[in-house]
Structures are given as structure tokens and as C-alpha cells.
Image 1: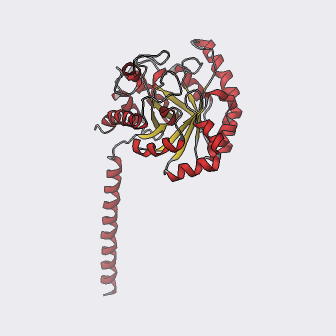
Image 2 (image 1 turned 30 degrees about the horizontal axis):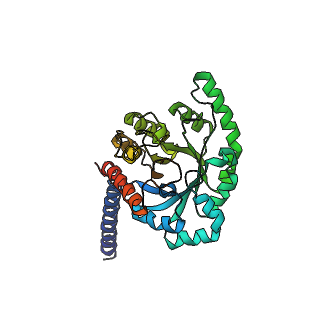
Image 3 (image 1 turned 180 degrees about the vertical axis):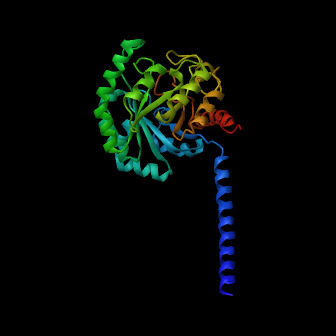
Length: 310
């Protein structure tokens, strides 16, 4: 009887294990089939220089949990932090159930961002975004030499980012060395740290959706931020509003389907910022706060259509 009882216990334990195994297998299968979701961040400068108390309630309406602060001339959220104080901004973020994700601040330059790293960290954020320096349009050995020199200059700043606990996102601005796909990959190879990556702006890439999608795949985990922003008719001179808005996803000629496919391919877990530059800088992209939110949501629906596709 003892042997029989033990066998029965073993049998019951075995069936329990099988059931548990089946459950775990089903869970794994469900996870593998889980749809890719874009994690959005709202660029506060899309609302111009509106008060943070007016901008922050819009963030969750845009399907996001994080916000990006900008400095003049693009926005003045960075300056609002100085005016209000860190504690007051922390309280505003908490009140609106929003987290600071990143801060873009070009005016200090990439080599002047260490104080900004500390400020971002104090506000609960995890990334500073800046562009680099020129010259542009270099090729071959000249490009390699320039990128190598830049990487050496960046090393102490990457070390500071690691110590503080943030990332540096390098924008591929058209007026800098790190503009071409080749130079971006070169810099990432020279700085193999998770504390620096590319904050890729679609506007500054060749307007070839397949090329952008493939480049996203090549960057892989070194892509830390993506601006869903196309060139449209540009942002350097004043245009009729309908033409200016062609920088927004789904309004201009750029097909974002291959681009989102690239993000899906690498299972991009960073943040996507729906973006454009108004003319002049520092004004809202549309007349009212409600209209800005509606336009961001229109672009979000366009991008999510591709993210939801099988």
C-alpha cells in the first residue's frame, strides 16, 4: 500500500507539473504573439511656450506617460524649470501622473550637458538629447578621423552619464558630423556603452522609408529615441500651415510603414516622439492646446495602424 500511495502521489505531482508546464507554455506563446506597441513621449515644445501647468495634462491624452522638455528657442520648458524650481516641477509632474523622460537642450552643446544630466535625473528623467558639432559631408578617411576624434572627446561625458545614471541621445542633425547613417554607426562602434545612443530624427535622414527602416535595424539597441518626423516641405521658412504640417507623420509623402516595421523588428523599447518644427520656433504647432493634442493623436493613429499590423 505504501508503494501504491507513493506512486499515486508521484502521479498527481506529475500531472500537476504537466499542467503547470502547459500553463507556462501557453503564457510564453501568448507573450511571443503580443503585439508590438509604440511607447510615445510628448515633446512639450509642440505646445510652444505654454505653461507646464497647461501642457502636462495633455500628455496622457496623447497616449503617453512621459514628456520631453525643450529649451529655447524651440520651447521654454527648460527655462520654466529654472523659474519654478525643481520641487514645483516635480509636484506638477506627479499631479498629472506624468514622468519626465528626456530633455533636449541644444544651447549648451553636447560637451556642456553634464549639469543638464544632473537636472534631468533630479526630475526623474533618464536621457539628455543634444546634437554634436561639424564639419559635415565628410567621406572616407576624413570622416573616420573626425568621428574618432569626436568619440574621444565624448568619452568623459559618457562616463559622467554612467555615473549619474542617464543616457546621452545624439541627434543626427544635418549640420553635424553624425548625420549620415555611416557616421552614426561608426560613432556607436567607437563608444560601446549603453549610456549613449542615437536619438534618430527622421527629418534629417534621406527621405527613403526603406533606408530608414533598415538603418533602424542596423542600429538595433543603440537606437535610444526616435523622432517620427519627416521633411515634408521643410521647416526653415514660413509656409502656409497645411504645408508646414507636412512634417507630421501621415501628412507628408514619407511612408512610415517600413520605418515602423524596423522598430518592430528590433522590438524597440525606447520612446517615439511625434514631432515637427513650426516657423518661427517657439510657437505652438497649432492655434490652441486642444488642436495640438488632436494633431498629435491623428499622427499617433497613423503610426499605430502599422504597429498593429500583423
